[in-house]
Each structure stands twice: as structure tokens, then as C-alpha cells.
Image (tube, rainbow, N blue to C red; front, side, top):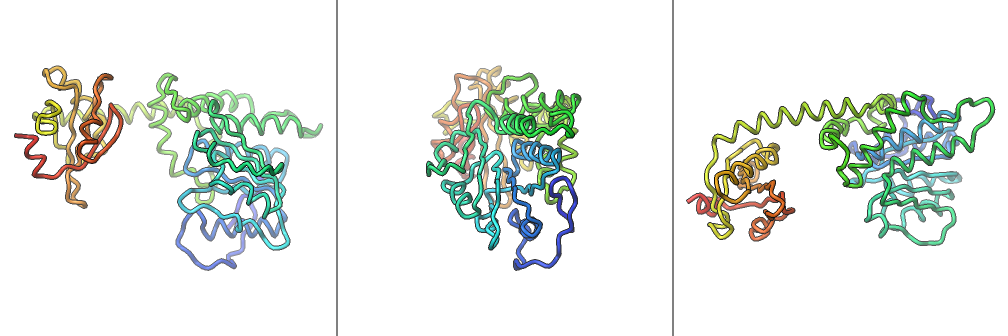
Length: 363
């Protein structure tokens, strides 16, 4: 087994002091990598938010910076499902110089505890509003929180390591850029799209197609299981992702359209909330959004409420789920869903409905 440290492939012993455990993000491989890095005196660690794309591309920039200067750095994914612990990095007699938290700051107190116990500087990046409540104002000068609600973590990390590379340049290093000119133009455009999605602006053209195209990358964003992650991220292209997303949107819409000639009238809340068109889509709950929006338009043309009701039977749970969608900004579907124990937002909501109650809605 091998682990990439500082751009070089280093062997990792299969003998480990940690007991066997099922494969998780705090896995044997991750713990072995930490132990090996400690043995090799690797004193810089970067943990990135997994499976966030902002976290993974931030890890790419950390990797490029340290590889460029031939500085050893251990980069690992960190998941909130089973995150790495502070004590994992506190090897007896050894500490760290720097630990980067990319696209997350950890639970309250995590950064300061890591700084104190691993005797290191901690530099964290995040762009989410909840991160502001997790900042532990301990006054430790070795802990720096970079939380900017107006800039995505990946953009902030890119700027940080780009500027840091310039400040660390030596005459024999050459051009002070993380990326070559071709990669820079392409990746900076990708960063703009990521930021548009991360900050919920949704303002760039084809942003929906971009995010759909990006979704297939989730399985590739673990640098432990995917040793080619940095190579793949370096070659990513926004136009390719948009093309892939549009193809997916088109195929899903074609699949959704097949249900539109099987509609029936639904009495929302037995008629209390008006009437709309509905359809059964058992086994196709993943198409609820596409079907529901088209039904919403069709329902409005039929003189009913501009709502589409998509009903799916869950064979495992033995119940019915009703998904409501609307393309009309003045319509609130969630009032129906909330009345029946569900929830959502005005344009999209859902709830579980008993079969006997559902039969009343179709009468």
C-alpha cells in the first residue's frame, strides 16, 4: 500500500497499531497514513471536507502548492459521518507545524483543541453561515478562521495558496503560479461556477446543468480510494460538465414525459386546498421533480391549481409518499404538506399519506 505525501509516493506498512474496523473515513488506511507521516516527520496536514467539491478542489490547491515547493504534506478527506479525531494527530513526542481545514472548521472547539494538543498552527476555511456559530473565540493566536459568506471556500483557498507561493518563491523555482496558463483559465471558470452554487446565487448561465454534471464526481473525491483525484480535478472543464448535465436533464425529461398522459384529478386535503393533477410514479421517485413541474403547468392549463402531485409507493416502508411541485411563484405547496406532517418550501414539498386517506383524495 502507498500514500501520496508531498507529491511523492511513499510506502505504508501493512502492520498497524490500530485494531481492524469497517472501512470508514476514519479508516485503517487514513490512520496508517497519519502514523507513517509522523514517522517521516511530515509536519503539515490538510484535511478537506468530504464529499464537498469545494473541499476536494481546495485539497488540489494545497497539493499543488506543497508539491511545487517539494514540501511534504499529508492530505486526507474528513467526513462529518465519522471524522478524524484530534487525538489521531497527537503522536507521542511529535507535533505538527500546520494543519489546514479546507471547506470546514469542525465542531466548536475542534480547531483550538487541535492547535493545543498537536502543538500547531490551524488555518480553517469555510463559507457557510453556520460556521460562524462554531468559531471558538479562545484567543489562541495560532488559530485562524477564514469564514467569508461572500466567497466560496475553494476560491479563498486558491487565493491563499497562490499568494503564499508568491511569497515563498525562490529564484530556482520559476514561475510563481499554482497553475499553468491553460489550466488557470479553465479552473478559474470552474471556481466561479462552484462559488455560484456554494453561495446559492444560481446566477450563471447553465448553472443547473453544471451542478448536475458535477454530481457524478462525488465518488471520485476521496484521495485515499482514488489516487488519481488530483490529476482528474486538474483536467476538469465547466463546458464538459454543463454538456453532461444538459444530457442528463434531457434524458430525465424524456423519461418524465411518459407519465404525463396518465394523470388524474387530486382533491388536495379532500378538496380543502383545491384540486390539481396527479400521477402515480411507483419506482420512479427520482423523477418526482421533473414530473411534478410538468404536471404543475398542465394542471394550470386545465383550470386547476398550478400544482403537480406525484405519488410513489415505497415497497420497503409500505407507504405512499406524495410530492408536490409548482412552477407558480404565488403558490405554496408546503401548506398542504405541513398539514399532513410533511414539509418543504413553496415550490417543492412532500409528505407521507395513508392509503385510506389517499383514496379519499381521488374520490
